[in-house]
Amino acid sequence: ALKPDGANVGINLGKIAGASVPNHLHIHLVPRYKTDITAFIQLIGRAEVASFDMNRLYDELKPYFEKLIPCC
Image (cartoon, rainbow, N blue to C red; front, side, top):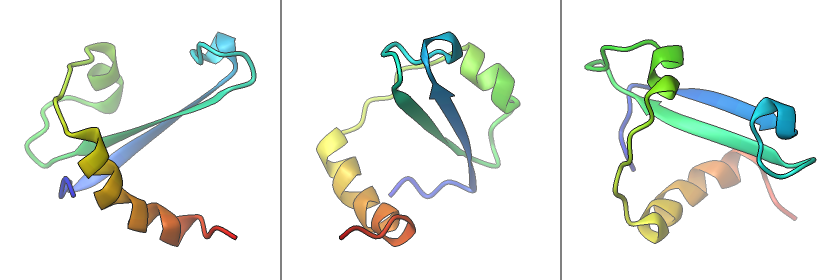
């Protein structure tokens, strides 16, 4: 879908860890590219808004997540 060279995964569990809802698991999946000039910790410190059609992105990523997490 996004064709990254790699990815960073960050997980927040609980309000003190940055999840806004108590007892809520929040996962960040950040695509990374060879042209990135910042380390992950610097990247998350300066969040930028990227415009994607979320329905299209969901449809493109769903098969990959289904392979990782088989359902029913």
